Amino acid sequence: MSAFIEAASPHTMNTYGRLPIALTHGQGCRVWDINGKEYLDALAGIAVNTLGHNHPELVPALQDQLHKIIHTCNYFHVPDAERLAAKLVELSGMTNVFFCNSGLEANEAAIKLARKFGHDKGITKPKIVVYEKAFHGRSIATLSATANVKLQQGFGPMLEGFIRVPLNDIEALKHATANDPDVVAVFFETIQGEGGINPVRAEYLREIRALCDQKDWLLMIDEVQCGIGRTGKWFAHQWAGIVPDVMPLAKGLGSGVPIGAVVAGPKAAQIFQPGNHGTTFGGNPLAMRAGVETIRIMEKDGLLAHAAELGAHFNKQLTESLSNHPGIKEIRGQGLMIGIEFNQPCGVLLKRAADAGLIINVTADTVVRLLPPLIMTTAEADEVLSILLPLIHTFLAEQP
Image (cartoon, one colour):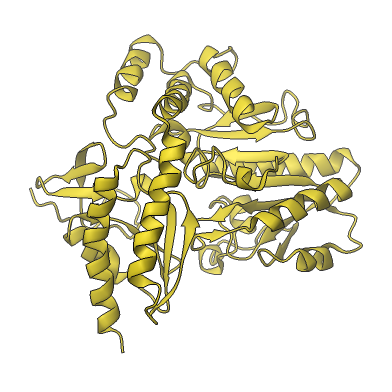
């Protein structure tokens, strides 16, 4: 069987622009396709496979859970949900957790929390501040909070109640919300992922925390892609020394098992009451075991410090090789969430890298995005660079 799929399956909806590759298995930071070709994985399923592939401790734990119980329902307590919630509370400095299945669901729940917060204060049409270049999901509510007009086309009208402002500009935020009593929350990613690896500055994070306290708004920080140790802290906003009121999580929390969570602090933790929100699969025993084991292994193996160190290594090598080239606009990110922005679209690098045995991503048309598993070694990082940098230099040399 060829590893290259010529056309989409006639039985699945044509919703993805897939590479013509079918992967069958993985080990650590490497995956193989149905032809036996090996690839070095620098994407981790878009920041999902925290512990890489076929981890020697995670897999037996999941097998153990499969033998015990996979799903009950939320009519019953799930002991590992209590364990995972307690751990997330400990790591975040917040107080309560709601479990769901994905980042979209976590962000949808955050939007509902903000609206209920407003209604509880007597605001009939609550508004949430969101940001240029933001991405929060593809449901109607999260798509409305997202800034990508291309993704919104064909699905209008968008949900009302969002005020959009530029990133890292506190005066723009103050101006956009001046004398508006209906604002209830500010919602953003600490590092915008799909928008091109755009970090929120630490100073701005502290300014916005102070403004939310002053105005009695909820500070809602989407850590779906940049959380769970990817930047070298458990959550990327922790580099600024602040604590949000609402924090959606997903992706890396389950190391590949679908999981989402909304962590809430004292201002938001009691907004939802029985009947206000729910989920069929959220908090199921298999996903909860995956989350408990992921965090346990990360702590045991010191993966936060490793992510910070390896990210600094990547940044140094990329900067030395590319920063003075006129075709490179910027190298940015933190830890193992890295963006290389070009002055023009660079989507061709996606297939060229795959052909060379490297899995990367291009987002926002002009940004090569690296999101490797947190277990990646320095030797593997150097292997990534040895493949990627020549491809980039060749691409740049082709441009007029």
